[in-house]
Length: 284
Length: 295
Image (cartoon, rainbow over all chains, first blue to last red; front, side):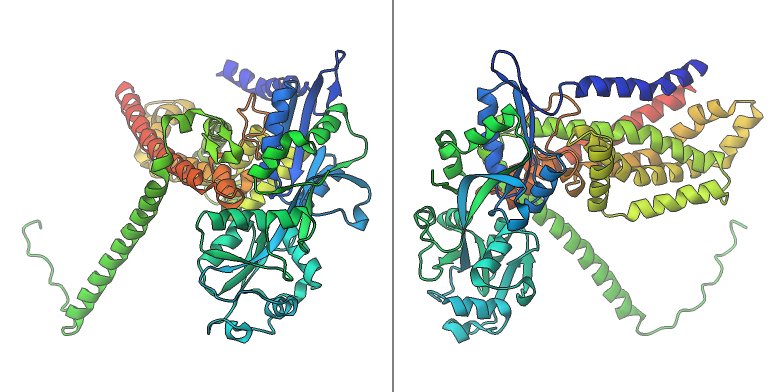
């Protein structure tokens, strides 16, 4: 009994040792003598960008076996907070930098646009700028008012903190508290499901996601925005009005592996990955 | 006495009871059928959508193209490691606390009330709060970062109340005669605990364990913030690792076209839960048997 007690009391110390040993490779990267990169990069932020960065990171690791890139998620605001607290070396944000975020440096990796979607069986061909504003602010509550069938409109909006919400508000010149949604959703997929399951719903989601899902036979239809057809080409040419850059941000000095990763993620070598995630490559 | 006629049943008010009885029977049956129906619907839906994408390769390959292609091997390994860490920490702590509550403290003493009160509060805390706590304590304050270790420890905090409560119930269900007999035979307190009380309380412990593993395996919110999102094969407990539930969440909500593999992963997760439940009960049965025949 006595011996057992002694071993147990040593356990925390042993765990601590194991811990220190495992931690020793270090979380910040540095270049070793022969020019190969080593270290670990943590990336956090927008859940829209995370799947893309996961793929980019895998390809980067294949080229630089000494570097580990960990991609976490949690939203744009989290990405910014984590970079500032130095919990992460790179943050992912699915919008441009704001004036109060000038302490950060951004690199654009791709573009994404938001588009309005309705159910496939909804016959409304297009909505004017003002009609969209009226619908989302609750001044228009029925589809028959804007030329559709007789049904109450289900307004689907995004939760606070989502970059798509901010982009939507920005484009239509609305304030957050002016929107009266019937349903508040989180991710793009969630929005698409809600609309596909409700013939009277209208929502705004990422254009790449919507294009993919409707090509897969999902019961949704994209509406033109201010008369511009929602196509990936229109986003890249800058013609599409509501598009957003997907950025990687850093705070302060960049270590060599971080610098290398940023240049890699913004280069043509990952263009196929960007397209595979239904985004539009950033203009170079 | 045994041959005496049964005492007269006080006569029930007649009339109306018949159809009321029938209505209750019908209601109970339809509720039971409804429940079974929901269960079958869920499983049927999972199997219908998920089974066509399942293969041996799905279990042994790494995910490709953000999880749309490839398999879930690193995610399975991470999940096992997270649950392993969780159990390695929560089992000794949980059994220890339960023994303290049931055997070493009188019901209404201050420490016992304190422990029990904290457990009741902890049991009602939503998992997302555990996630925030785990992120703040393990990931940031203790510097473990996004890692399997912080995920497992966070889950351990979450699972402890269930484990302690059911182990304690198991210990309390052991008749006092056992303790008195052991004391009369001059067995030490440790020997009584180890040889008699704990084996006899195994059913309670197993129920707690199964519920705990179930909760740990199905947790998503707490793990997003602690063990993280990295879908690479973990090299150590300090690596970030994505759990099966986080993978399903990401594929279903975040990755266009990830639904098929989300379903397939869900089938794997549900199968895993069933297998673990059955194995736990079987192992406990065998252990209990051996333990009692030997003593």
